Image: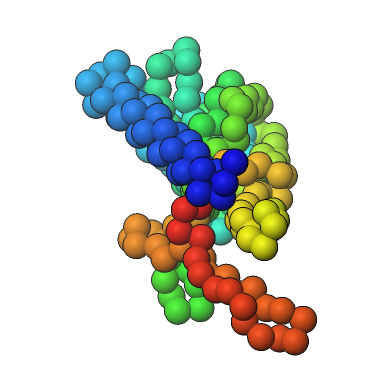
Length: 196
């Protein structure tokens, strides 16, 4: 199989995964808007019931999204310090957005999915650590094919989860760039990971 065939398959798989994700998001959005599913931005200041704490590995701005099957409701919980208050009960974690600014004051969002359904059971006045999220680890896998090579960028969470997307909050993101340097320090190849 040639590098072009492999890249074509990777591109098609990425496109298919993207379409499936968009369909799932569209169905969820439609369901929430049409009344099939409820949606709330949880406010612990106005909530009257018992709550428990959830701490994230990232101690900055974040939004945790959960789904309650019993209440048929999607809920968002926001934090500025990595500590969240959630109502007592069972919650299915759908994802978490960690938001930070770089040295140029540009906002970046890391959208993380736990992969399989992550269930958490919140007890009153108890803290629970949710182990998924930053810091992120980037690595490059090199596969040689004679005098050619494929470079694959892989970004995972600290827990090894590769279901994360990092982008500028305005949506305009240039793909990461790379340089390949030989043993004498000369740049022999450069480019970007524009296909993921």
